[in-house]
Length: 177
Image (tube, rainbow, N blue to C red; front, side, top):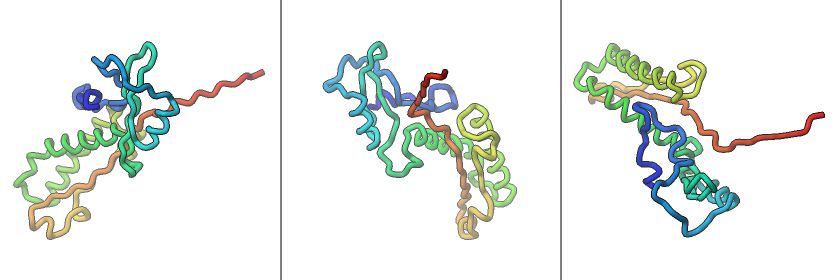
């Protein structure tokens, strides 16, 4: 399955929203067992992504779920997005080490993270009509105790609203007279 997951960032700075679902498995020439739609649905509800062959479309990873019981972590793309954001923010905040852990630093850290997340939101990486609907960043006396500060810990709390995949496409057709 790693073949379908090997490239988590396709465009610089933008995780692929739908990966690894619907990925053609290059070099795979056949399957030992064919699964139909009913088999796929049964396995998918358990968080098992199947590999299926589709006429004229090839052999594909069909699904992008995790086995997590927590609905917040149901999709692979959400997990990958959070990993990407965490690693990017951590790299972007390396300058913070050994700075005075005070209100001025907290403001600078919030501004740095917010600027990064606004850019990510503008690129379509987060939900919401405005940044306040897409994310929040807290880094102040509410996120740290005096003990944290005394022991050199700067703690930020960040929340994001990931874009969810269109997993089910439903089309209703009727006759109008």
